[in-house]
Amino acid sequence: GIMQGLPRATFVVATLFCLFLPCLLSIHHDVASCYRMSPACGAAAAPMTHKLPILRSTVRVSGGGALRLRGGDDEGEEENEGEVEAEVPTTMFERLKINQSTNPADHPSTLEWGLAVALSIYAAVGAPFAAYIPGLCDLAQRKPKEKKLSPEEVARLEREALRKEQDEEFAQAMMEDKIKAAEKKKKQEAAEAEARAKKEEAEKKSSAVENYTKGIKAKKEAMEKEPAAGDGVVMLRIRCPDGTQLTRKFKTDGSVGSLYDFVDVSRHDKAQNTADPSIHIAELAEFEYNLVSTMPKLVLSDRAASLSSAGITTSCALVVQPISKD
Image (cartoon, rainbow, N blue to C red; front, side, top):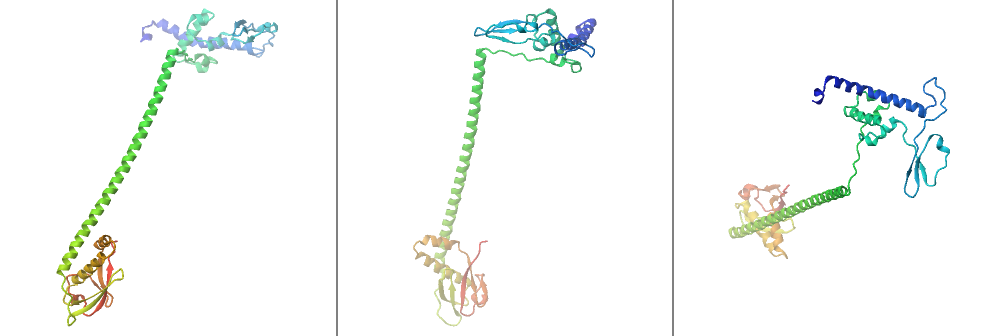
């Protein structure tokens, strides 16, 4: 918008100035380099036998000494005690590389100040063609201005850094506390679930024992007396897993279920006579089995069938065979 408001002639002059400024500075740079660093300027030039005068000045430093800036033919002069020598830039190109301030008081001449301002404008518009002109890239770079902080600002920045560090530590501590709380809650939930499972298992076993005990009582009441030997009566010997031998006479027209009732009641009565009957009765409540005949090979699984229909017509031996839960 600003460029559109300027007169066309002003715009043309500014454009030409920005184009020819790099050329002027480059020529100045080449000439200065030729006289300062090279014994000849060009192929036909004679060896240089003189030096350009270098600025000379002395600056007082702490401790009573002085900083003397000297050059030229004055190198043989005596120096005062405590003096330090240093060479300062002698060409406008070198001074502009170091100092690109737009303040007139920072430059030795109005021309140099004008060039510094022009360089600032040239760098602001993107420094066109700077890559194609020797030494111009160094001049066109905009050096950041160092801002000196006041003691109050330094203290404020230190407080902010300390507060930020404390906030990060607090956030880290809060995160660790949350992780620990989550782990503790997870362990607590796992322990509660395990306790509930154990309680349910205990209740299930207790209920099974209770039902088993009631069933044994009902079987005792319904069990018939042992019949006398005679026709239609067989003697059966039943071997239990713990080695116990049970012997009793049964009618052949009696049910297979009466054999199971006899085994259950007999094993229950034996468990009650042990040192810890509750444990044995709980095991019997979960125990499942079949009665098996070895000679002949028979599995008496139909408890409603009669002994004769199941194949038991003569005295024989039976085995209590556990049923695998797998």
